[in-house]
Image (cartoon, rainbow, N blue to C red; front, side, top):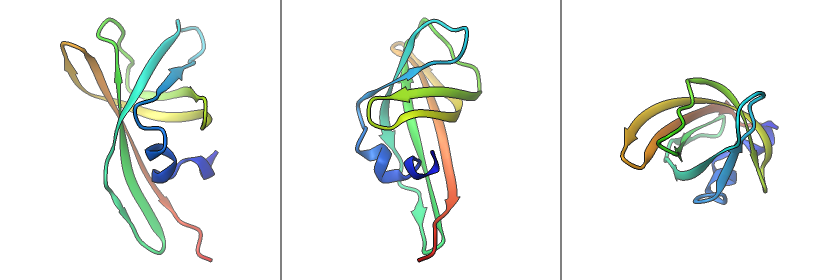
Length: 101
């Protein structure tokens, strides 16, 4: 799964839906709306992604299983960061070592 968790992988999936498939919960989709510029060095990559969900369903902070047509199943730690009239926004932050070649 770690090979999927790179900024470029998420950039390719901007404005597409990720289905929340947590056990015991009803179907829910989150739209990937933003991939933030973090930083990348020869040894480390850091970035974050922002999802937008509906106003009538709230996802608490924690690890959630998401499914995507390109990236497959991912366990991602989501944090609610904002609410507006259209729904809730959630952020996931990634910071990992890059394999040195």
